[in-house]
Image 1 (cartoon, helix red, strand yellow):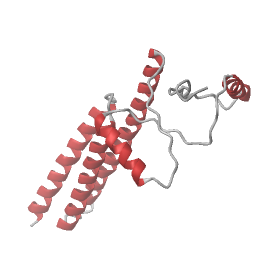
Image 2 (cartoon, helix red, strand yellow):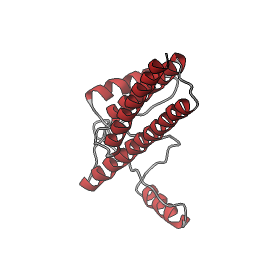
Image 3 (spheres, one colour):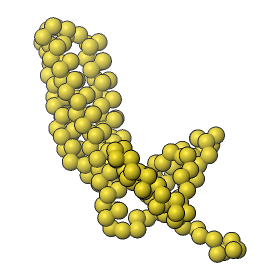
Length: 178
């Protein structure tokens, strides 16, 4: 077989087989092994293809050059595969957004605690302001990766606005105290 005849496209099969019953995992493994599939001991990561992300991936590969990478650009075989992978990405962003919401709730609780304990200082305000900036920065990073519009994005935006208003109110209380 010459190099021209060798395949240059490959199936990358992603699957979730339940741990129990183990016979299902074995069944999948045997089927794909019989088709000539290999199971390299590699970690798998899927990143959407896009102009900005392509540059970032190449940059990451360069930074991580001490690790061996094999990179394929592929497309789903079936429409349902595309829907499934989109759903996985959406769920991942959703989890990230919900982590931000939890951090926003803690931020609001911290402001309340400071108000209740009369800890109304400029230093505390500056610390809270830095925390809010960090939350906003985190949100922007997740939003950049959210190519499919996870529903929790709106909830994060509402909470960030509440945090901003609470911080403003905190600043007003500091000024009233002077």
